[in-house]
Image 1: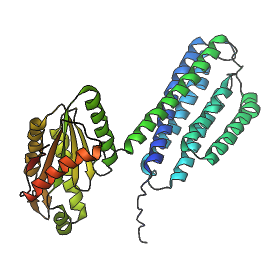
Image 2: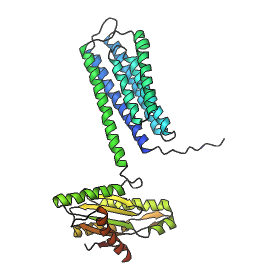
Image 3: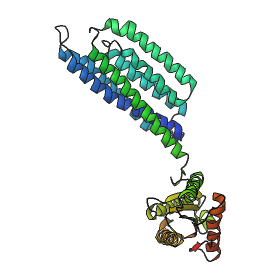
Image 4: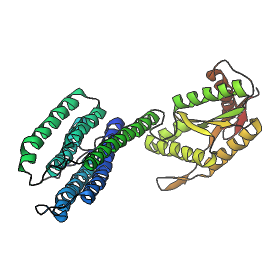
Length: 360
């Protein structure tokens, strides 16, 4: 029988990020619930019917182990099946795992009067997928778990309900912190997704849009505070020939190598981006024309030294760079960019593999 080859699906970045949110929230809530359960054990007053050991087994070990199994299985699913199923299927699996975890808690914490407060959390988590059907299904699931808790788990429990202020405070703090964890995870992931929109997928450098956004910010600083800066535009020499001769995959390797050189040579304040295609741009705050040319030449020389293997041979490539200093105001970012672009053109027609500077 011929073995079936599975091709990995490329899950959308947003869906992948939200699955990470759900897992991170579940993992942290598991730790938090274990701590809360330990506190309940410490404040528990033993009786003849229920010793502290009995209480420990029911309200700490049982939910902690059960929760760990659910979280562990969910992690394995994300690792090994995350790219083999559709986005919606993975979201459904995530919701199932969350509900299994809540079900473990519902079976375990039958003696806590305010436990139903926790059942609202899965509805909030389901909202991250931004699909009404998931929220509706999760709401129905939370109601079902509540009915099971109220009419099945509690009546069958051998433990009396704990009705003390200490228990109520511990549970309230647990729920409040759990919600804070969830909100923080969503906030971080939203920021990460926003950043992905500004990044180039091949090099992970900032993209064309991010470059212009940052360039306009520096132009405003110059207008308000007189802070000078320079930019450089770099272009890989004869890149079309590289693609035609060695293939686009190898061309991508050359592009990544340029990105590596930029990352190595630039300072912490410099803003590097892949402007588009084989072009790269760098904003250099505080550098005048002279300093900018020195940095540009450093980048040029470093890239020229790099060797890339192709068909058993080590090959090297070159870049040309144009530099411009923002020493006066320009009406638009595009007009200023043209100064560096003209300098780049001069470097190209002047023999390539060199740095040229704008006259303005």
